[in-house]
Amino acid sequence: MTVMQHIWIVLGVLFVFLNIAAGLIWVERRLLAMWQDRLGPNRAGPLGLFIVLADTLKLFFKEDWIPPFADKWVFILAPAIVVASVLMGLAIVPFAPGIVVADLNVGLMFFLAMSSLGVYSIVLGGWASNNKYSLLGALRGASQMIAYEVFMGLSLMGVVMLSKSFNLTDIVAAQENMWFIVTQPVGFVIFFIAGLAETHRLPFDIPEAESELIAGFHSEYSGMKFGMFFIGEYLGISLISAMTVTLFFGGWLGPAFLPPVVWFFLKTFVFIGIFILMRASLPRPRYDQLIGYGWKLLLPLVLLNLLVTGAIALWLRS
Amino acid sequence: MSLVFYISSFVAILATIMVITRHDPIHALLYLVASFLAIAVTFLSLGAPFAAALEVIVYAGAIIVLFIFVVMMLNLGKETANQEKEWLRLRVWLGPSILVLVLLAEMIVVLLQPQPTAMPAAVVTPREVSLSLYGEYIIAVELVGFLLMTGIVGAAHIGKHKKKNLHRYLQTYPNLN
Image (cartoon, rainbow over all chains, first blue to last red; front, side):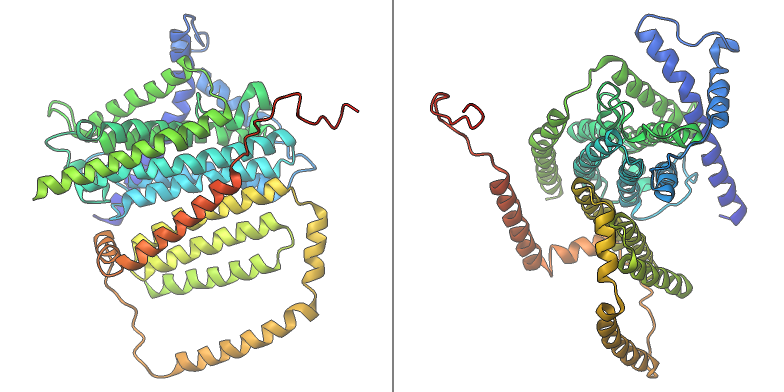
């Protein structure tokens, strides 16, 4: 592959995913409205699509205020971390044969590493704001994301055992005959729940629980710094959806009448829809319920899944 | 790759010096994260991508977050920063620094010896790492498992709440009298 091709792929991935993240502003509101039996944004432009423009313009022109009591540099650094870590995570997703930014042989580990670095945006943002609600949000966020990172990593090890590789292209190729959702249903469910918790989306938006903590860790943020948290969340949804498709639903594989990239994005959009449906339908659990649910239910379940998968893999080999 | 190695090692050393000299604990921990990331790149340039990924996941992504978590819970303020400033006086750091400089001089002399110091070019794949962990080093892995289990049991014991089975009339109410 030439250098120019690489640059085109990088630019393409950036363009597509930043636009998906912006477009999700509209998609989420319309879908939520549909499920809640109302109209949602429908005034600006066709189908209300220009709400994206209006929202973005508003974010850009709002006063970008740094509170005098905040730790200035850490306050500025925090929103950048969330977007950067998610975009780095997108580097290892194979969209079609040959269309991948970095075909690493430890691709899956790289994804886990980047998603674990995402915690810093919440922790540092909440701490640097020097506000009690932000700090409480940051404390909740840190413990929630550290706990669910463990299950996220462990739930993927079954896939690694079956495909015998950490390379995502190999993992997709190993699903040629059967998607891993068939052989790893428990792994899929736990990965998806952990993904919800890692992107701190509703129902697991405990770090920013509006009814308790104003806006949680980003209470003090305004303007485009808040916008970065906002876009970072949508990028996170897209990344987890893309990874779910790659790991459990055969990635780009699909009947030949559509090109592989189209299959990949169709499947990804289904999971983005499920993310939004979760928000529309489920109430937020209490903080201790979330942590207890993770350590007391998901951890034993994911270990059992690993044990059974390993036993069956050994039995099939002999 | 050797240029990548030297740059990331330099960043690691610089970041570690900053860790020691910062007064604010959170800033120091941020530099520590930078240092771990630099060490991960060093591993990568030496052909150990698996170790690099683990370095980021375990150290930068989990352990330092817990450190920051604890520092946030303690809510250390200006006083701690001042205390740190007190501790970083010339008299305190001069002695250890001189000793370390002697070691550094020795290391430079050793490195300047005409020896083949080629870096291993072979990339260690995840498969090789796991095979050696569960083959050659199985005893060490199991011992580490024991150690971690001890830690978990100890933490569970400390964190366990004692259940009181007293009748409510027998409980003492310090606020009532």
